[in-house]
Image (cartoon, rainbow, N blue to C red; front, side):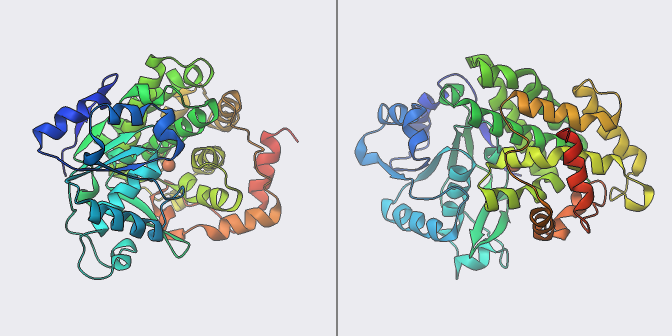
Amino acid sequence: MNKTIIYNEENSLLQLGDLAVKNNWEKLFFVTGKKSFESTGAKKKILDQFSMAQVTFFNDFEVNPKLNDVYKGIDIFSSSKADVIVSIGGGTAIDMAKLINSLSCVDGNPEDYATGKVKIDRVAVPHVAVPTTSGSGSEATHFAVVYVNGSKYSMACDLLLPSYVILDPNLTLSLPPYITAYTAMDALCQAMESFWSVGSTEESSEYSLKAIQLVLENIKNAVNSPDINSRKALQEAANLGGKSINLSKTTAAHALSYFLTSKFGLPHGHAVGLMFGWVFEQNSQVEDSTCNDPRGKSFVISRLEELAEFFNVEKLEDFPGVFYGLMEDIGLKIDAVTLDFKTVENLFKSVNIERLGNNPAKIDLSSADGFIDFFKQIKGI
Ligand SMILES: [Fe+2]
């Protein structure tokens, strides 16, 4: 795997100029968020270091990268003749940069690469990733999500790992409470899902445990009374969460969440959190016959117990209530969307069954009744 070089100090975005000199980068292509590029202070930090002749900016894309938007980016990138791509933003901006960097230099039809029919074997230039949210950890993964004709694909290749990552906590200081909360929830769930996943390894588990601890120690402060220390901790947690899923991938809570985001526009981390408590409960019912992990049922249960311990929960059945309590405390409402019978049926149908193989237990998606009863109980109805 590529070795990414990480800069992780306050104001480390101001080191980009030196990095450009060292690498002889004369022209830089920036893939950025729209409002966040300015509101985080990133734009000023860039314009303080580079002349307008050196830089090209691209931000003409929606949340969750679409292949047509990638094509627009490729056109501008190609005519910019840039020596480097710098992504500054959330997971979408970083994934968009990975897609432009790889799909701009393929032989044949880029769609075949985006949909996984053909594997990419090169990228155009080095990629410097600068996350301005603390959630997806995309800067630490070799995946890039892309939507082609409405279907979601995840391109995977080691070459998609950025060459450099700049973690500048000052860029996250202005994040509003709700975004702070749902991005941190994404980081937390990614780390926890990685920890219980069939694909977990010793290394991924180490990243997970550190990420979980950092999120839980800092999430309330970062949402309710943010300071540079809690911001820095969440940024590190998101990066570690990214490293953990880079090795293990995510599981059922992520797989179930995408429907809530596409149907209701619920932000990704909020949607994943909603699904996580239910998936935990399902996993805690694991039997030998429903266990996906070759390490066995007792291994899975011991993983769940370790997770519950972080929340000071002794009995696994008490975990979902405590977990959803944390979500409510940080402003992530559990009744943010109405999950009636029909909606849950459609939600279950939307899940790609193959993707559930990384979940420690087989999950029964044949009936919506249990799911609805579970949430009724959680809401105390
Ligand atoms: Fe995620």
